[in-house]
Image (cartoon, rainbow, N blue to C red; front, side, top):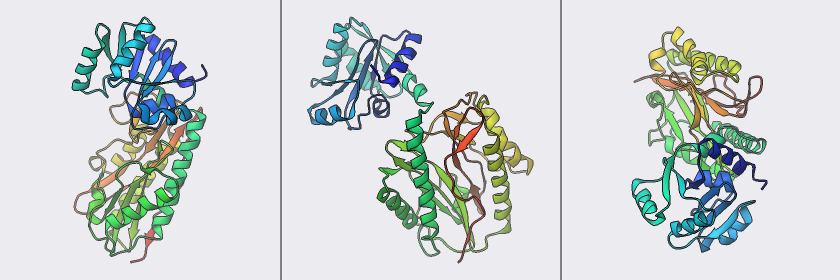
Length: 358
């Protein structure tokens, strides 16, 4: 067995006294097996690892998986699981409680008797927090695509366009250049809408003398990037340039000082304390950042409440902001990977105050 992810999962299972784990999360299944099909399950015991799928995916599964046994499951997947557990003399099956609905749990429990279902949380997700070298290569490519998309959109956006038109151009550019899709619903928030931290692109017409916040990312080969830049069209209210400079100072300070061994709370404070110093603490209502990987929001969290310890191999965002309702807002975000001595920045788009002509 050379599947290092499965081997590490078994170590985590031993620590939790788990004999076998039934993986229903599509992302966790892909992480463990490499299988990208839309239907399948993973069963891991102390001696074997199985990918269970139906006849439609048998060829694809065989091509994509390594060191995992591919099994065509019966009409009721738990009938196959029951047989495999009996062959391994396993009487308790752990399942992903954060992914399985109560209805599915009830059906599985009935079909699995006399074996017992045991809920667990985060076994695979905890492994995914630390990225290996191959994952980091993919994430760098996803970050590079986000940078290229921002450069492209600077030459595209102009007054008179709707936010949605700009969003569609960004989506098209990312897909044309290798992305499966955007990492999440792209935020293009202009004018007073830039004060909405999650101002997903709307039919608002972009005008002059205002800010536009772009928050977007590319989902590339299973991994996400997440980039935010705020630019000006024409000459916006001087107050907006003031808060831009404050957010930039806070973001640069955090990126320069985040390092392994810090808690998420300490990393958050690097940015938050600067914004509070200028009197805008109440206008920065979200966390400084979050983990990034196969999902756009993962652990660890960089927030006032987070005791997560930052470790080498973690990828996190750094995205402070200030939002003034009725006027506008600013957010600046990069993706960084924690290293042995500090961090390395994956996204490299300019953070200088960019002003496009009206």
